[in-house]
Amino acid sequence: MRLAIKPRINRLIDNIFQEANATATRLAQIRHPERRHPEHENYFETNCPGSAGHDFTDPASLLRHIETVSHLVPLTGEESVVSLGSGLGMDSFVFALIFCSVTGFEVDQEVITEARRIQALFGLTNINFIKRNFLEPKVDLSPYDLVYFYKPLEYDFEKKIGELVQSAKPGAIVISRAFPHRALHRQKKFKVIYPFDWDPTCRFMASDYYTAVRLKD
Image 1 (cartoon, rainbow, N blue to C red):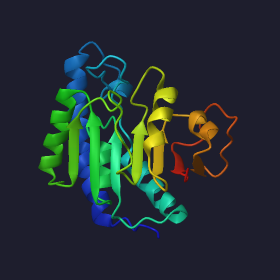
Image 2: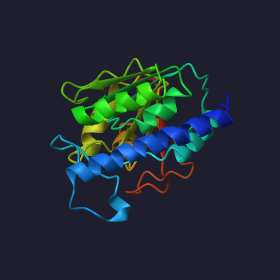
Image 3: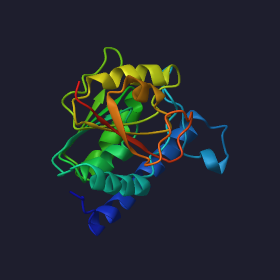
Image 4: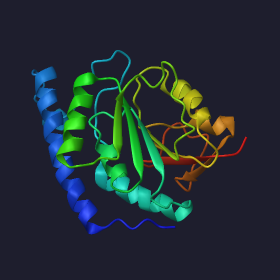
């Protein structure tokens, strides 16, 4: 089934993005007052050792990718989604406008407070932002139909995420950015469905998104 993204969703996401972007810029100015480069005006470090800095998932590209995935695997809109390292929640907001429920795990209290503020501002009641390190202890991913992450860790990222996603249930979809996914491919428990020309020997991704489906054990 192909999910149809309605024009009103695009307009709403644009408004949410403007609010989230303004919030990120404000936090960056507070946490990094010495930084003035326009390319980094909304990038800031999180208040958690070992976590990657905050950066945005581009909502337009994520929407396009979800539509692409809907051509490859059945999607009804009733799926539950989890975002690992949800930050200010931009990816969670996109998912919440399309799918049934979204859970976001984030360790930075100030960031998650701002994400909840934006959530309330736009009346997105189907998101649950949780302040927690999803690795200590490891979050059980089996309740979720779709798992999303955008390199939430700086150290041993591939190894730790590779171990964590083993708890995903058969049929679950894993979407991510900025990760070569060799660990998942070697475990042979996942089938890569995007990019279409995926080369398991390649160290880096040739596209913005990598998507795989958890196979049966």
